[in-house]
Length: 123
Image (tube, rainbow, N blue to C red; front, side):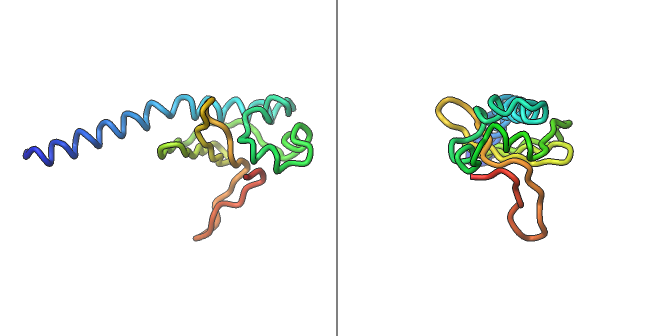
């Protein structure tokens, strides 16, 4: 294997390792958010929202509980730098990394054929 090919393989492994290391905090944030929203703890759920997403709701603490979000088994986590997607049973969430950690930018999202996701909560 040449030097160039070795460098590409090493870079790919480092990148995969970084994305893999980010899955735990991303998953943790998504699970805490869904648990709080599903159990009626709107204040705690709102603290895990990105500021723009929280501001998009007139009364975050009440509305986030009424959306019908529920915790479920995590089916997949994708991390792309400061952006992430978490797929759970019946829901998809999008997160962003802020200086103080990961926050939910969109929740209650469903895929649409060849269109962006349709989300109940979004920035």
